[in-house]
Length: 295
Image (cartoon, helix red, strand yellow):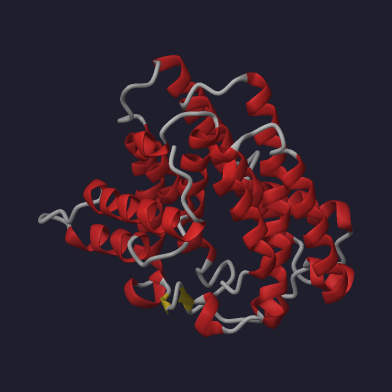
């Protein structure tokens, strides 16, 4: 594998992901509105971090990440559905996402709910179209993603986050919320890439630990950006956590404490990659980038 910079890697892979996503969700001439709404959010840009991490994990264990576009795109559909629903008035009530009006501000609450539902269900059909993988491996991967996206993962974390608004939340609860709400899909992405590419049990264990630290570092830096970021750069209003009376790593540890915890978590993530060679360079750069990210 030719070692690319993080920028080169992301640019190349995001191009593949965006083209594939557009093909997986075409406009239907009979009922165009739902497909338009799905495509509006799905093709609005974004970091494509979860599919990128799946591909990078596959590369890290000696595979070729771009061979697993269907599963990678399914992950992005699930992530986008969660954002559409998260932005709804009944949830975070946000007006902007990825620098554009949120789905419900354009299509209305009802169509936005259905657009999210459409992406979630389409994701599993997309993932199951993956070829050149042993059926039992694909079943394991899709099952792990389903668990990570459901009540034992992302949905469960969102539920606790929602009912905790305006309440005093301790560090243990905050960590659970974000391990489930944010970290579960990161872990599923990394484990999926390793499983699809035939990684060893030792590699899978190391990447699972890396994923836990990456997810935590991502959430801490996300909380920091909600305080010090700008809407132009992060693509959504800043201060939404304060508006919704949510506990964050900044409110729990102070801004300086959150920054220190983020660096410590990044360092721990990197330790888990010591057994990998240059094939894991993208994973190293991805987690190091979190400390200085602006979006």
